[in-house]
Length: 283
Image 1 (cartoon, rainbow, N blue to C red):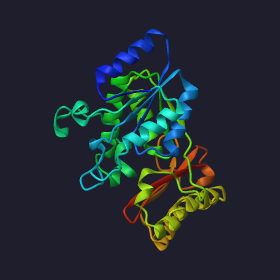
Image 2 (image 1 turned 90 degrees about the vertical axis):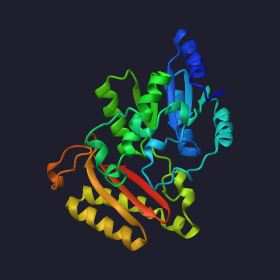
Image 3 (image 1 turned 60 degrees about the vertical axis):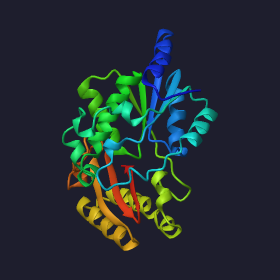
Image 4 (image 1 turned 120 degrees about the horizontal axis):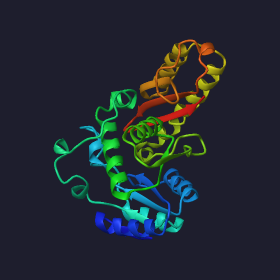
């Protein structure tokens, strides 16, 4: 496995592979890799011939006052995990190479409407940072396929929309959420949880599963959402949203379940101590 920070060095490897007609897969990450990330890599290895993992803690997607400075950075440990999986390349660029200018002077890629709801409403500017860095990585790496996790479901929908709108010749593949034995979705931010909070955290997924059953039982969506918000608060969370949406567009689902034949997704975000947890479940 090669490990590079320099953009031109990375592109030399890419050009060599492209000349050999190799299909290139990109797995973008912010590092601090756990089993969820590694599953993305393994999924990528089934899709193409060469896999590059990028590790870049992207300052543009951290709104002011969030955990950019304290976000865990474990590049050496991450590299060992990737090499053990047989990854072909690790791209870990420096911030000044990705953003030569101040962030406010940098061209940004915006997906309107989708970026300002749900997580975007509570983290203004977050998804502009996501789409901008993903667009830059697509331009730098020139992948044929890119793999993203379904845990960040809104992010996945936004990136698919960006690819469609801008005509990127990149196939977007998704990989299912990886969970702990008690159902908690794996996340780098789970390490912020105290032992007591960690015992409470699986309640988020339990409420998503209960809401799925309530949708099937034709319970009004507004009642399901309100009940889940109340349950999260009672359990010790500070919920931001619990929302039933159309799976493809993230538009609010119909108030009448019996009249809605579209695939649905239930999404939730809640704070538990210093950890902001997100999760979702398909219906």
